[in-house]
Image (cartoon, rainbow, N blue to C red; front, side):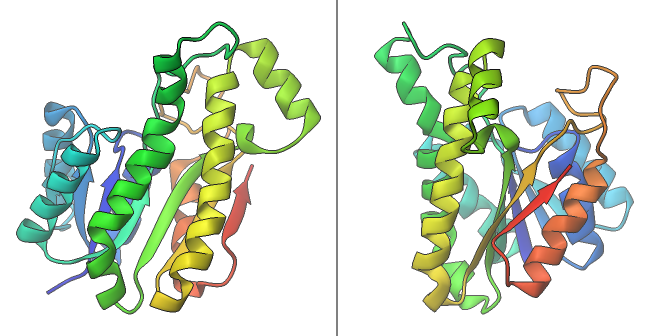
Length: 230
């Protein structure tokens, strides 16, 4: 039975390229996102390239839905050897001042609560795989840097910046916590815009395949926990 990579937050750009890169290496691919139609088309495209794939619709911010998706992927495609976390929430507040308590909680629902729920649900498989891994997409707004903070505050990305910073810390903590279990945890920090993604306004400067290659390199070498692509 082949290894399975669970791609959470599937869409055009990074996660699509990761699915193809790992699929080409022999992985079965389990795609998770909210849009069933999008997932169905993606599965057909992967299968046309000879990659075994399945669709498991779920909201990445809903722990119960994520657990069901993990269970469904495991039953359909086999044990989860790799989790690729590419999910983010477009509804989080751009300005943290004046945001409601509910809006502020949403900042952490996907990058912290959802990611942890996925890792916990897949952890028995990740540990049994012996080379299990959690691979996290992150963005440069997570940098602890005055210029980055100033730009995020002025351009209305305060919520995203806080969510990304939380992922930076969570990746480090999970890396230390799961190291003795043989589970590698790492992230790629993307400092740019991915061609063909929802963020692409015609001036994107990075190819999804470049980021996917960085993820595959981190996974195979299992040494550094962070890689920056710009």
